Amino acid sequence: MARPSARPQLIEAALRVVEAGGVTALTLDAVVEEAGMTKRGLIYHFPNKHALLVGIHEELADRIERALLDATGRDPEGASLVDRTKGYVLASLRSLTHVEMPFILEAANDPEWMAPWLRVYRRWFPEGEQPVEDMDDQSLRCLVARMAADGLWGYESTLASPLTSEARERLAASILDVLGEDA
Image (cartoon, rainbow, N blue to C red):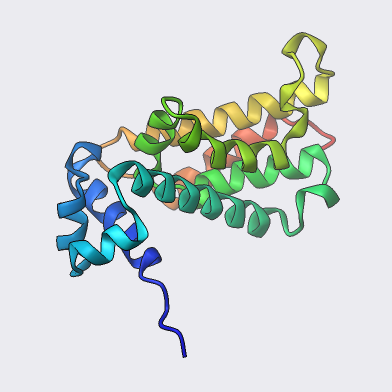
């Protein structure tokens, strides 16, 4: 019987390192210490820090995809733009934490880091490639709602203490109001 991969444990350890000390604290040695593994075990899965960062981006993007599926209740291909947008707003406000923020911001610096995020976003919002000038009113409202959810998540990531669940739900409802009566 094959042993389970240590890869998920290493990624979780890396995320704990970043949560405790920021992205600058992320070193292979810090991950090894946090995971309680050998450096050789880490190198087997992630030969260098870049590979570890690619793995972290892949894991975080997969988590967002799962949160979107949970919030929407279906695959994106079977959901309307409004339903996908509602799912995005709810998933963003319920499941994202502040640890994702530095990774998403850094992703723009490397195509390999950005690829998992784009894969998820393009699957859920393929119309996002359309210029704003060409969007109909509903598509524009959906974009504004997604941008507001991103902004709220960024805002909360900078607070010393998190918002209450009641505050988050109220803000989510307000963001979803942007979608209008047809939502």
